[in-house]
Length: 109
Image 1: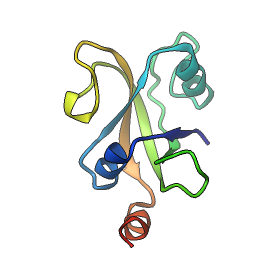
Image 2 (image 1 turned 60 degrees about the vertical axis):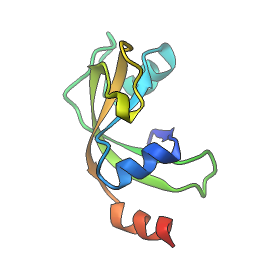
Image 3 (image 1 turned 120 degrees about the vertical axis):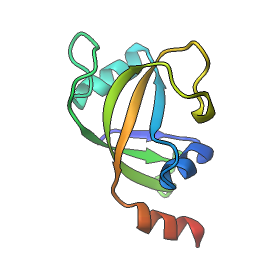
């Protein structure tokens, strides 16, 4: 399963259900990873497929983590959610958060 690190600010907004998208740079590194889980086709274009990934606030195995189902899009993101104006991104559209209640309890403890 693909695990992506994410800053605490964005992690919290996703966990609360406010932020509905996560952005990644359009480059060969992410293209390969997204192709491996079926979100991009061999030409680097988004597929209609849904995939489950982990978003981790930090790099440690014990860092807070949420499992989310995502679909892929390509385009400009929302500035309030971290996108730079005029830049284009791989946009991970968050469809579902699996362990939202459990992680929120652990995070607030």
